[in-house]
Image (cartoon, rainbow, N blue to C red; front, side, top):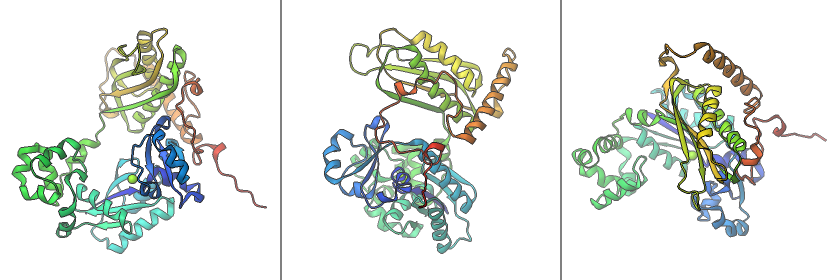
Length: 414
Ligand SMILES: [Mg+2]
């Protein structure tokens, strides 16, 4: 059996972890630049505020119902995610992280229902984060089971024979992997619930939706098709971008923002033990106004794939030289690295200067270990020095309780 762990209202739960006074109160977390709602406590869901609702639209409701708002604090969420994942690993051994708050795991055959409940309780006690378990023969079914678990006691075991009740009422659009387009096509074909879809049979699924339809059909009938998530898990690119709170017109501030994003993606590359073949930088003017047609990105392909911060920074500086235009108000910057290949299978170039790359690698190892020890961003390139000028709006940001010395909670005993 396959299990899916999903943290309940994850970002909100992270905020509440250090603010127990917020436990029963309505809490929502906003996206970058405090744009729209990305996480809601049950109380906020009950008020009818939907996911993605723009901040300005809900301001009245916030005042009326005293909703507590937070800006996204990804540093905190990532660190709590790491703790939850390691607690899950302790219970089940190998896990497959699917997103910041979800992971699949294999349930040992010897496990009883009581064992599964116990494992869930252990994670909740160790981390303070409420999680739900959906257990089923396939990943797609485990995802459905997880939705049921959230409404009940946190664990739902979904067996082949017991699916009828759910499949009769659940619409196809609610199934993991069925997008709006497919959902629309299905309803045109007279298929509304999962039951309807399965009634049509495998040939129908294959004919209408190809391999994807076939896999979905099998997954919903309890036949695991592992490769389904394998392919989606394999990342092809890593991206880091942000909008500025106010437009930026000077090159050095723009480079500072790019430097920040380069540092982010380079660290991720090294963590995943992959190297990138291509770097793309994005410096985009506002989507409105006179500069809308400006070229807003440039890229470089590396002869030897890299994950070195220094190499990527140098490349970004060159790209910015060609892209930057005086007087243009830039609204957003970011970088994308793509063509990812495992470090172990990077070919050795005959013409590259191996010595430089080697010393850069050594530097990266030292920087990574210092940042691991003293907190993210403790050591970084001098280019990243104007952060306050471009950092996005985050009026309601909570402290980095677990990763910054100065943010650690103080307890006074009197
Ligand atoms: Mg979740």
